[in-house]
Every structure is written in structure tokens, then in C-alpha cells.
Length: 399
Ligand code: TRH
Image (tube, rainbow, N blue to C red; front, side, top):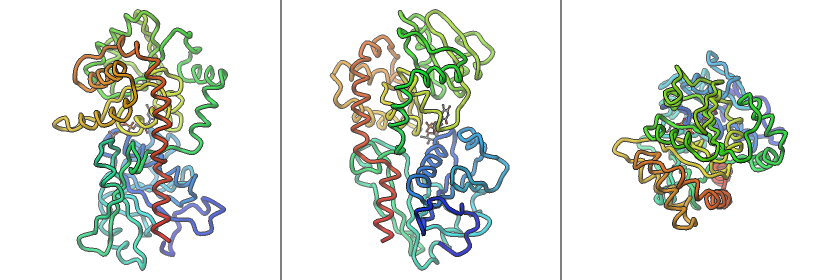
């Protein structure tokens, strides 16, 4: 990197004399997935790989939801060993231009032209990645790590494709995750503390099915809420405050369903939860029997939580998301018995606008779905952790 480097933390990894400098550029399109993925990756590169990481992000308010200690009015700050720059696109590239060894352009956001020009002037061109959105489709492995030469500068960009299968970039998984998960699940005290802190209540009885619900607005939710109300055994629903909250409020006849609210109808008992800091979201998944997740990052976390889950995929024009949904199902449901697989496909489709959800059918296959969720978490790990895959490739190129 260039000599002027005042913005980086003095020491990220004391064991590393010359840490690799990495800049991640993130434009927030909507919701929390763009910054969610970048922030998770940044922390992992800093804490597990000793890289000096800066994140340039254009929306500090969205970021603050995941990271409450962030000051949204500060142009530059350091959190968890990562420098965060408020990115004022398109020209801005930090108060002093300094080019990193590794440059990650997240989700095809455009790097500042001045930064690209500075990259081209470097004696040794930085390694430039375009980090793509996660897709389970087969073509991903063919395009992963393909270079794309810049039309004007002597620079080349490498496509980095997350994926669910071997030969792709994998998905993010922190080294400590499984141990933290096992410690939580193995400790009734930790679980009881979590319930009290999160809902104000003690853990539910053993015959209750706990469901976490993180989703976009969804027409299928009304029917599902009715099915839960009429379920033979108790359903305890945990709903982080967000886009689906209005439907909950309507169902319970409340003005809103904001954090702290609790409502009961029939056998359905629902808690509205505050949106947590990103590292705390996993405990919600671990505490539930079935997780409804959406977008990209929560979809991945649900897979590591190894519980049956339902994915609300990010909707795209012309239903372009539906083949992506089926590609994920092809991996996730691969070894399920045909009837359980059918129930899962039916439910995922219904939750994404095709058909009606059938909770009783889904639940009938719970033991098979639970076993598959555990097996799948092991299978998924074989694709390698995204941060590890990226750092290994980077090191091989920087030699
Ligand atoms: O928020 P998402 O829908 O994000 C996205 C964006 O829409 C993006 O533009 C799109 O391209 C992408 O999906 C596919 O869903 P996602 O990806 O799950 O991000 C949510 C983040 O919020 C995730 O990091 C988990 C975190 N989270 C918390 O930190 N606390 C919470 O309480 C909850 C419910 C989630």
C-alpha cells in the first residue's frame, strides 16, 4: 500500500509484520443484506486473517441497525478492528487516497474513478475482486474466479461467486461459530437468559414449536397465522421488528407490532423483538425450531443453525428469483425422502408466491427436515468458508 496510511488501525494482528490491506466498497441498495455481508466479511478478514480492513459504505443508518455502536454522523471510525469510512459516492475515496493490496467491490457497486486510476498507477496492481451475490445455480462454479480485464487500464477484476457447492466461493462462516452454537444449545441457563432478555418471558414449554419470522411483506402470512392460531399444539412466534410487522399487527388487531409487543390468539403466541446487533441474530435462530429467513445473509445463517428453515428469497423482476429458489432447493433437499422433499418444496414455493402454505404438512416431516438440516450444514462446510477461500486465493496471487 502507499506510504500515507493514517486511517488504518495501528495493529490488527500483532503476529503479522506486514498485514495485507483490504478495502471493501459497499453501496447499500436496500434492506440490510449488502452491508450485512460486507460487515461480516470485514470483521472476519480482520479478526481471523489479520488483514487491515477498511469498509467504504454509503449508508451508515442502515449499517447502524446491524451495528448499534456505529456513529452515523462520523466520516471515519474504527469498530472491531475495521476502519469504516462513510462513502460519499461516486468520487469520494477517503480523505486521503490510499490504495489497498486487495480491493473488494461488493455486488458490482462502482469504485470511485479516482481510486481505479490510483490502482492503475501502482507498481504492483492490487488484486481486485467483484464479490457477487450468492446463488446456488450450477453456472456459478464455472464463473467463479474468472478474470475480467479492464477496458482502459492495465487492471483485471476477478469475479468471486459465493455458492453452496464445491468449486464456488462458499459462504461466510466464522471459525468460532460451531463452538458458540454448541455452547448455547448445551446451556439451559444461557437459553433461559436469552428468553428473558429477548422476550421478557421464560422459555416456552417443551411441546411448543418456536418459530422465528424474518421476511419481506408476504401475502401468504395471513393464512399461515391462521394455521398457527388453530394448530393442535402451541406455536411461539418470534418476530424481529420489520417489514412483516404490519401483517402481525393486523392479525392481532393492534395498531402496531413493535419491539416489546406480545399477543396471543388461539394456540399462537407472538413476541415482537427489537432488531439486534448482527452477532446476536444467531441466538434467535438457535432458539427456534423453524426459522423463516430472507435475502442472503440470514439465509446463510439459517443453514449454519442447522434447523429446518423457510427462505423468502429477494424478489426480482419477471420472477427471475424463482429458478434461484429451486437451485437452492436442489442442494438443500437433495437427500430428503420424496414426501418430505415435496412438503419442503411446496412450502418454500408458497412462501414465495406460488401456492398456499400448508403448515401441518411441513410439520409432519419435521424429523426428516431436522436431520437433513444437520447433514446439510456439514455438506455446506465442504465448499469452504468464503473468507478463507478468498484469503487463500489472494495469497496465491500476491506471492
Ligand atoms: O435485509 P435483507 O433482505 O437483505 C438483502 C438486501 O435486500 C439486498 O439488497 C439483497 O440483494 C440481498 O438481501 C439478497 O436480508 P439479509 O441478506 O438476510 O440481511 C439481513 C441482515 O440483518 C443479516 O446480516 C442479519 C441481520 N439481522 C440483524 O443483525 N439483526 C436482526 O435482528 C435481524 C432480524 C437480522
